[in-house]
Image: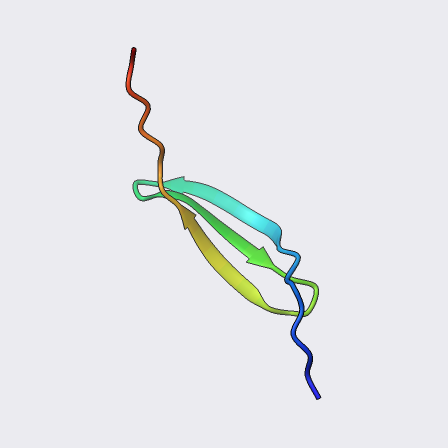
Length: 45
């Protein structure tokens, strides 16, 4: 029987693209994921 758990993600690598920051991550259970963090636009005061 498989029980669910809260994944503890560790970043293997990350790099910037025109779409934002791409991160490749894994959990100790063997699951993997790719995340995209869009760039933040900061307006000058």
